[in-house]
Length: 535
Image 1: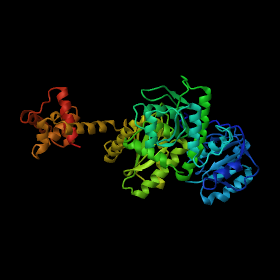
Image 2: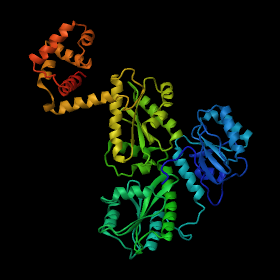
Image 3: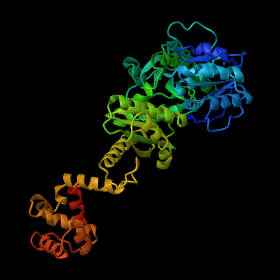
Image 4: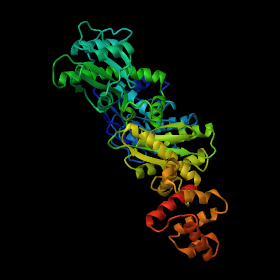
């Protein structure tokens, strides 16, 4: 599966042409509206995401989706529209405020390029999925024309069951069974029977790997008999790059592999099921909420299915980075504004990005193969956040992670990085914090946790020095002397005492209190305990 939508990609060509006016009419005014006149009946043969930082590609018949035009001046946007018109684009889709509509209408009139306004509540990812569906609807259906009635998914499951000879289930991303077949004589096993009764896929040791594979595959996938489970053919349901669910058919044909006809049947069933699920998504969840729920699950690490990366469109091979944002003293309104600002910036470059507010902080997850790549994504965000939310925001970068179960650990690391930044444990602490930048501080924190949890590692003599006021200067002198690598003169200067005072306190630590300092390991253990308890 093409897991992420890059800023630029080759336009998807389709068979029958659809006019731009037809697309706008079918999507409806709650999704997209024309700015000014639509001009002639331009035909659309594909879509393409367009980044304003790049030159306009050859765009003949292509509807350009431009997430990054909101900050452009009117003159710059006019130049972009003019270039797109010269390259044969069918139209340019943008998001804009109501105040800019007259200026954009004038640009459309001057360049002859239709401009479309995308509703703010519609994510670019969802719009891409809707367009993909509409541009592909003219292809041949799974079977001949027929009245599917009020429950098209059940009728679709029955058609597939008649072809495969076994029970068919259509599922959403949460593995709820949305529809199932009821063809007389169909092959069915106990697992499918239990799932139909509960309307939920039963737990199985094979589930996570199987679903991950299916959601990342372009065509149908065949699974052989596993224990009491009959052979199954499965295919992902998606619209564009947006995963929506899956179809599972018990295969009674006896074929060892997926045949070309089986693959074709499953692909067409996926397209039809995707159309119905996408309509439901558009009506009931037209924003990023389902994706935000996935991220919230990943951050907590509870009830993971193992397919979250595939559902979010993040390739496991490349990995994902997690950004944690914190604004000192921010209230709920500022946190919401911070999340909105972060996601608006990130999706311009990573359409798979998703962000949520969680426990007073904002977390964003997106495709990135290295910490440096994630830092480059975060750097342009800081001036925007300073201007729109407030100064003092710190960003923690954790990752990359390659599995769903690793995201909760990345969130814990991001929290530790933000805490280290808040304490100012590193001189001239940067505003974008990475593990490499504060590693010594992280080591000391973990050592402190280790000493607190394992009493046998603590030297009682060191604890005794810290416990009382008269002996506390001895502990402070020990710590300073060790930090000065045994240099008495330097330690005395830092403490503001005479060198003989330092020597006297070291002698008392050894002779009167039993602190051992003869070997390097002993000095290391003493320093770690003193450093950990000095926090």
